[in-house]
Length: 178
Image (cartoon, rainbow, N blue to C red; front, side):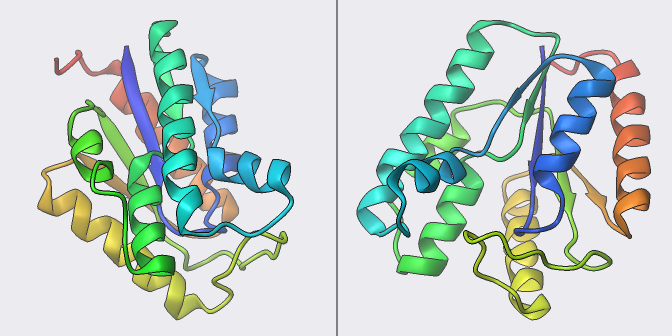
């Protein structure tokens, strides 16, 4: 099983690309759980929700891993929970980062917010490009600091889809690294 993670700031195309990659290459796709949580609770999140949301994200990932697909596509993973918790609440549950380190992820696609417009959807909270660029940098810094393999994806919607499809196709043809 190869595990692909889409990461980066909001409104950069993670969910759309995750589904497009699944349509093209098969496998299983795990959705971002915070979106579901907010839809179900009908309110904004608070710090007490971070633990619940992160555990739901892990449970969804674990269920997909147990199915052992040839390709597991994660719309996001605990890195987003960790960074958003620190950004919004200036704190994060102590277990989040160690749990992130305990899992193997083969490749991250880091989506750049430049080149595509921010789209309000009732849940997003960073309409300013500079805010999204800062979050993008936080993601990149974390990936680099922890030696995680990633590829940068950017441009307009068509360009980022073409880049993602080409990069993932190339990557899937490589022999497994584990």
